[in-house]
Image (tube, rainbow over all chains, first blue to last red; front, top):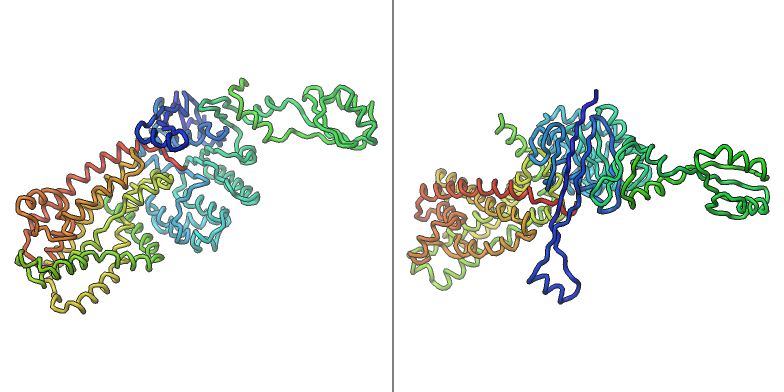
Length: 331
Length: 264
């Protein structure tokens, strides 16, 4: 039986935030009488993650996804509740715990800007107590997996964003951690670089059985990597479960693009009681519920002169977008 | 074994930081030149014959200020500014989850910078001797070694003081303003502007209880061959390190609980 590697119970986090009114008056007031209030950004959440799972954290900006990851890796201290990661209390930052995890933030870098990445790799290797031979072996293996070679010897400042991100990944994985916390790892990368990174993460997960917790605003990252998602809405978990179940629940309809032989047929079809998404000349897109798709198609084919027909799932971004603005999904 | 591992980490950090510093050799030369305050002070002292009241010859005084320049070159610390920036920009986050205290990085950065500025400091000393040939002297090996130790201890004290102030970033976000406040006693009481011996006796007795005279005055007097209490000075330096280190550890441990990982 696969064991839980992350246990979170009744976790909350509050930050003290000071606010300032605009203008000179507000500035002076702010100087003499600063008003701070406690803002609860994570509110009583609980979940478990099993070893080897890849879990996506979904939520709008400011929902609390990154704060959860920061608490899981021990970067910030929880206000209430308990977290156990790989048997450790993350915030104590015990050496054995730190050697087991890594955190990659898409918009932050740890590589030394003016030196080639290889220098940072050897530095990280020594920080994680790897000898030079072992470090060399791991750098070779990871650079092959990430398909980087000459870039290792070029100063970081001269690398493209994609090359830099790959180097960041290598630096963060040189100690072969069991748990990866990835915060927007594909941020700013082009489509090919995103795809390569996803392929690499899948391979890494398969080869090492590492647990991966991921936040991303690119739905492709989530759909191609995660079977399970945790949706966060205003610091609370609105859904925790399988991604395909969520999609089924949220998109009970299919979109069908029908190309009629004439515009008259398209107009007739538009007025025949189906839910129409749009109509352009003789092309019409209608929405049909999943459970009535066969009978509806039969009716359409029997009663209208159809030239062509395409069945589409609604765009995933639209579907997931609903999660980001709603509170509860009872599945 | 633990110390071996730490040494290996520090050694690698030092190597990497040294490579990094060599990317900035022009800047380091300029920083070295910017540390010539003691030479200005020497000029003020000798032109106004202020040394006569202290019974210090021109030669001994010029050696003192040259040594003060050297000690300053190898004990200057700016960790509060680096840490404040890294902390506010969230750059410190990746380092916090590595099994090495981030301050070791700054420590290695400072040491690497000192190694890089060494040749520039020698060049400045060379020019100093051309203009002040009467000041040329060769300290004996024992004194030279003790001066190196004392300068390193001075660096450690300053590094710890600034690291403690830097940790206040977790509460105030702008800890460098506190450092600027500390700069005033450092400037006046450390021996950078005037040897501590020039202060009135009752002031001196208080100054010697603070860490400031052990930052520049004591090592500079030691290296220049001026009369000084060697064992007393070294003991005070070590004592201050023993006071400051646990204080730093405590503030670090409390401060990281307050860390909000801003900017990341």
